[in-house]
Length: 319
Ligand SMILES: CCCCCCCC/C=C\CC(=O)SCCNC(=O)CCNC(=O)[C@H](O)C(C)(C)COP(=O)(O)OP(=O)(O)OC[C@H]1O[C@@H](n2cnc3c(N)ncnc32)[C@H](O)[C@@H]1OP(=O)(O)O
Image (cartoon, rainbow, N blue to C red; front, side, top):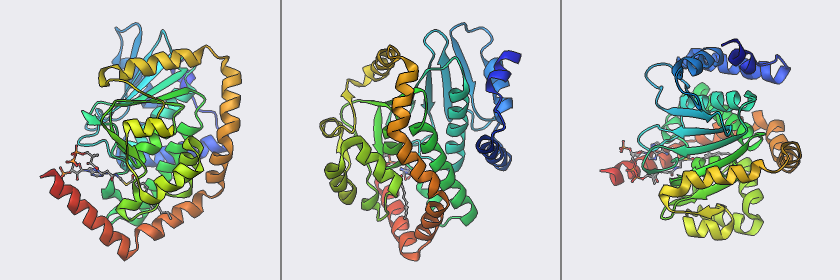
């Protein structure tokens, strides 16, 4: 137990201290487990398994939302989203994801991460629209900060990261997938940044991410039109890297990580960091401004009206 805990201890550098305080505030607010408590669960939940450690990241009631396993032999972690009906990202879910990312990043035994979904036909439906509709302003700002944090952690991760996209992946789901190093997708689903179709705007860091992934010209068309691409179109544009049948998505992601693991880690990490740091630094330097912009935009009457209509259309479609 001592070994596990010391591995997860967070050194009190200013940034990490701020992050810990943020997590502590959120865990208190939302009844989630703290990092230390979670490390106990991690150990306690898997006493018999030799190769697989299972960590349920939150306390009773929401423990099934995010399942994190680490294969001891390969060092590959799998983060499986399971927030019915569509894995939409609300504050609590994002917080759990961030806690898991922090733990895995600090774990010496973990070298790769696959993000996938347990919900049939859905990878992630993006942000939980209910967080943005008739919001409490403090929570709205915290929600956006937590989304920023997820992007910063995932896009800037030292781990080899892959998205195993086994279902629909609009908007925030596409952000999550594009923040990884590699994307493998099953055929027959849609992916893209469809914000304009909802009457909202993908912020600059979403835009930077898609431009970094598939170039300016295709991104400016995709962003303005809010295009959701089929898996095949996304492959042609470079938004995803491979299409394989649904049942091979996970195995393909694992094989790809094994391939990347053959490259000297230090060289790969420095290269990744050099490529991604400018975008991450840009968000860091404009973080508070971006939160204020989001708050001011979302709380406009006209945007609330548009979101209300979009929610209605989703509900009608679901009936
Ligand atoms: C200046 C700066 C400004 C910044 C502005 C803000 C920028 C915001 C950035 C990102 C935005 C987002 O991520 S917004 C979310 C975008 N996502 C979508 O548009 C996806 C919407 N959903 C769908 O298209 C479909 O649901 C699906 C393809 C994902 C799945 O289809 P399926 O047929 O399987 O399921 P249903 O459509 O029947 O849905 C079931 C159920 O789930 C509810 N639902 C769906 N999506 C969401 C969501 N994103 N948030 C919350 N709830 C969602 C849907 O309403 C149904 O609910 P009920 O069963 O209760 O009716």
